[in-house]
Length: 388
Ligand SMILES: Cc1cc2nc3c(=O)[nH]c(=O)nc-3n(C[C@H](O)[C@H](O)[C@H](O)COP(=O)(O)OP(=O)(O)OC[C@H]3O[C@@H](n4cnc5c(N)ncnc54)[C@H](O)[C@@H]3O)c2cc1C
Image 1 (spheres, rainbow, N blue to C red):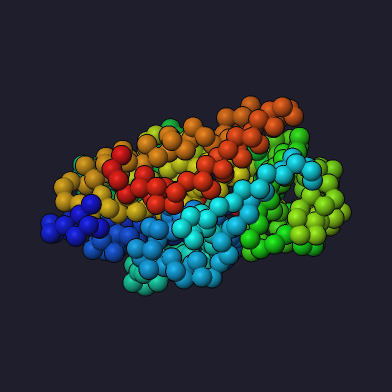
Image 2: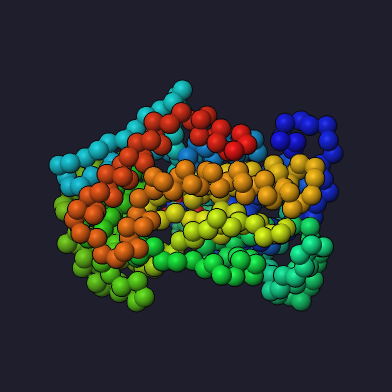
């Protein structure tokens, strides 16, 4: 790992364009910068309007972010998740928790806060806001990118970090578009306390799954269901279903009155399932490359892992083609290992679930979380750092 392990080989002078200024794109640019490259980031958003929803970061990502000197700030300013409850009803609760060497396995961080920290590791003029690519040409020679302002520039490598509806994926991987998981997700406003700040609670019912947290978003729940139309989300129907789904006292720390729940937003959940993350000198990272169902809070951590591995390979001498091949190879093993244990992916695609189906998913979900909580923290990162 030349860029990271102190190799004496010179860092290759690659011109890298990162499309997308979310966690995946900014982490890619920050790791590249740390490895001696000078990437450019363009992002469609203005970086201000996005809501500061919390995302879960597992220690596999936190230990990597530590190399950018942002982990201490993150961990100090956000609560560790100490308790994760998976429950069928108020009586049957599985409580998952464990600390390793005094560290908790995951933290809930504000998405905007993390992006701000990552941006602080980049020169201001390397992040260009409200700029999107409109044309991507070239393959073996330089890649030529035309932007929406008419400017055209040459790059050695283009990284698509532009989320689940990636433009880059559409431009270079045109047969693969996001597919609905079969669920609809609803943001729910709740008047009342939803539990202690370090607690995440999942309530599995025959109508779907209600998740409180992660911590910091204590007035919000997420309601994921297969029982409502994905094409035409109806907030009234969702509110009605939700009030029948959440029993009084379902959430710890005082519970929540079902009549105090109101649906504020609903959307179909899209996922990306692909083994193709590279095409010539174009690579995908984060949600653009692969996403898991919304109830599996692994995607932000995997975006950071992608970023680390890609930046590592691009800092290694050799051709850009070979660097991207090695990147895809290392990440493929990780994704396959996770996919084997991730619930909801196939099951929800089959449509509405019966009670037995949901009970099975809940059990697999609990098993996944149990394994994440039980896993030794450095061992998770070893998957990323060692060559697969
Ligand atoms: C609606 C939603 C809710 C989520 N909720 C949670 C949650 O509660 N908990 C959790 O752990 N994870 C959640 N996630 C997942 C998490 O946000 C992502 O996994 C994580 O942010 C890493 O994503 P990313 O950087 O790959 O993509 P994104 O965060 O989607 O960032 C993509 C970036 O690309 C930019 N962009 C898009 N198109 C273009 C273009 N054509 N040109 C230039 N820039 C472009 C966007 O403006 C954005 O800045 C959610 C994701 C979404 C979409």
